[in-house]
Image 1: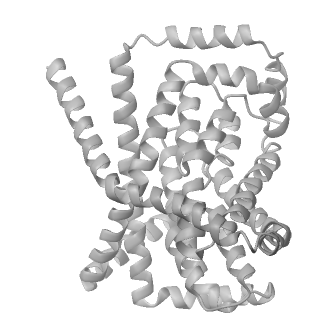
Image 2 (image 1 turned 180 degrees about the vertical axis):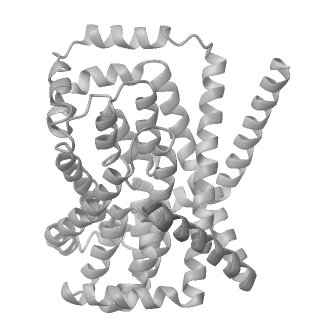
Length: 403
């Protein structure tokens, strides 16, 4: 019965998209172009270096070295191996879906069990500091101090999710985890790193080429999801489905004493966080904390667009998607609650104390993030096209060599 419902749902969605695209080709093209520009200018150039570096560090055994040293921290807190610290740090530094990408690679390398991988992926996918500070705080709210509040709430909520998810499936692998407990040893860490490196027979050129190609393949897939969800959200709004569903969200917002005007922007944010965050900040509703809570929730929830990207990456392994989805709901709730508790000490109080220095400090921070975004917008497309061309020549050379 479930398979029949799934078939009807998939077929119905596809038919709906087809007719909507035929009916509104101009609007669909505009939305598609917006998604393409976002991927071309920001997503690809900002994520590719992290993906490539992650592949190289895993291949050379450096992640294994870090894992041995971080085992005493990651195991008690999150019930995952020390190598999870690498996925966690890279996920926070570079943003979605880096954590899922690295987790799947670690699972392929047999450095994680299935349950450990599902725990790890649940809290290693987060917004990057560039997105929180540069796009949301400066670009949407025009206030860098809100970036500090959102970042602490977001990453703090992520850590709380990891602590909660440590109990997921704990009975199933309790004995296995007990057998893995070992003392920290730098010598053992070096030995593990050396063993991992020599076990890979590929020369450096091939390792680097594989890192570039695998990373580009993943990012091309990510770009496809960004474009299709951008079109999907636009079509839902044009046809009138979004306002209908948003009316149901108004009841929930009313229960929590939040402005009902945020319903439609939040609904859009459940699909794509960038569009949703932008719409939330443009709503003429008070108080400001309501908007910050809403943005914090959708940042933690990730949006269906990012969840689809993660699901596609997880599909290449035996890791299940549901633990990640459940963790996203937890993350959204935790991040929203943290905003409520931290709004006064981290934003209102600091803004009042530093009122005299605010213009200078704010201007300096905004200039930094704005310059970063401007550079991405100018050089991002050039970098993207150059890298894809490089990957094409690598594949062409290998094809000629094999033939």
